[in-house]
Image (tube, rainbow, N blue to C red; front, side, top):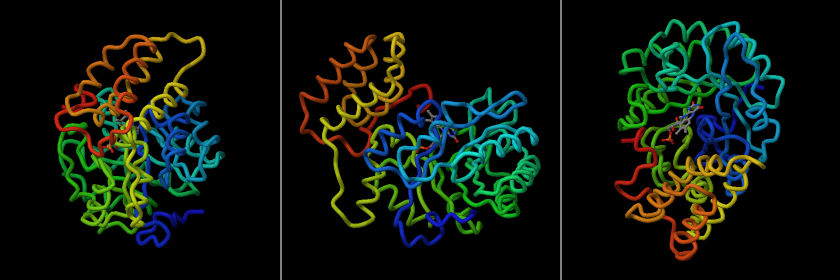
Length: 347
Ligand SMILES: Cc1cc2nc3c(=O)[nH]c(=O)nc-3n(C[C@H](O)[C@H](O)[C@H](O)COP(=O)(O)O)c2cc1C
């Protein structure tokens, strides 16, 4: 049960193993379905299950496990710090068809890390040690950790690697930033390389992988076992297919703007809740289109117009104008220089 062959250090079956990064309010079942249609990653992670004294498994997140639209494995992510609550939740999760249990050691939201959960735990290696000890004892399937390389700097990184190794963690995903680096600092992939060389288990490189070319060069450089991709998969849901085609020396599919229109329409159908306020649907769509817009036009005119829409009618007028009037134009592989999806987070 504990083997994780697809991400073994030297996988012979998959050239560049990929994972969709867990993203709260994004990587639920609707988005998994949309990604699966365009070429799924080799591994999915759920959004985090909150773990505290009164927590119970969130039904909506559970559906991304029980109704997984692909044959690809799903790791269930937990965020919390209380040992008994984590054990209870890990046991509950193991009643479902999960590939493994993942512990969040990276969430940078101050309201989270101030409670010493998520990224806050990286300040207290002794607590990480206690948590992984009890999880290892109570998790029969693969146990994985998703972490940043430190809280404010790398002072505990080597100690944390030792702890991961001592508890025979089966998979480690490293977002190559500190917690205080948020989504702004430049990723430093040397920590991924250090973890790959030190740990006996597979390591996934995470942070700012924008294209299939980035995936290939960063994997070569870091010797990581695979790549985990978050925001670039919202922008370009074909990225896992492109990575696979590139690593198999096949022609890489380059979507046109008309393909992006179909993607936006599927998002709209997936995110609309019957009888709900139109403005809420528009708000949910904007979360995704803020990333998509980075590759539509170099001036950011699509982003500008899309952000000003208030109704789905206005939003579709903008989508049609930018995506269908230029339908044969390539969707840019990378974000255009100078555009930002979330100015309050990424600048
Ligand atoms: C909207 C959003 C929600 C996120 N939610 C989670 C989460 O629930 N659990 C987690 O471990 N990381 C979460 N992350 C972090 C991502 O998994 C990933 O580590 C980060 O975005 C860096 O990868 P990227 O540059 O490929 O996006 C989230 C990131 C974003 C942008």
